Image 1 (cartoon, rainbow, N blue to C red):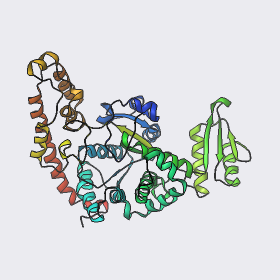
Image 2: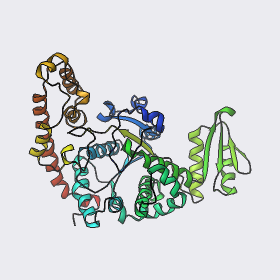
Image 3: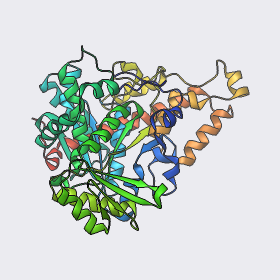
Image 4: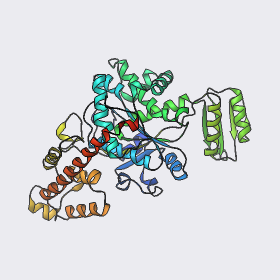
Length: 429
């Protein structure tokens, strides 16, 4: 049984297990519908999703949607964080509303960081890098501790959550401090708050994450369901009948749904035929909002593969040699590449005879995930490696130069981003 721990170091050996064990859907099934897909999509780095089809429908039809992620300011931002930032930025470029949360409450509760350190790390490590990578004004950037909509919503969600549920999802025990539990609910509020009235109301929201963060997604989807007034069920066994049940709704709200959909009203539910599920859900959301509810749509998520640490295993913020930070000196980043573990054979003779194994190579991953945008160029690198004509020493030098150039360019853009913080409602002080 695979265990996903959002606060620990998790290595997934077989991503296909997650489809069956956790109900994650295959992303490739949607890929053909996406215009100008991100390279993580094209290259199958993003392998799974929950409800992303709702985001895709909104994207293709020009309707509102949003993308959100949070960053815990407990250390340096590295290439793993860059992956998530790029996914948020890509969705903003497709017309989505971008949200970037600095999870300072989580860092304070789980990692023991001071509030001062949380702010400094949040701005200097994460926010500046996100802007340097292409995040545009109009994005919502905030710190959890100073953001009233999230704090208020987390309190409301806490009414629907209980210790048993949090224990089952996260493995909390009697030794877990209360603030740690509160931080988990705050993350759920982060995920759901783009659907509040002041941010445009209910809409599809995607959370790009590594698969270790799926517990947060599962908790939040469950809380969205519990918080809503109505439950909508498609009962295919009864000729496509759709049933709307009122969990916490007044009789008047059910009457309005029946009237607007042409459905048959019963004591605690309405049965509707001749309408699509999307049509019914749209009416139900409008009625719920009118009667004071939230009408949350279940948050969507995409799941990307973990980057391999430069010395093997998972890239981890607690092991500096396993990652390249976005603020590493360009020369230091290049040196880390030169020291990285590759998928090469033991000897040059074996390399030429058997070929390399790029799928096991942390250096090739740097090209795949970050340093080569052109798919054809990447394919040539792959072919030369498995064909035995590309040797690891030369490949490392090539990759190290690309990394040096990326870090130099990125850090110049970070400096320029300091002058743009005001466009995002922020300042260094």
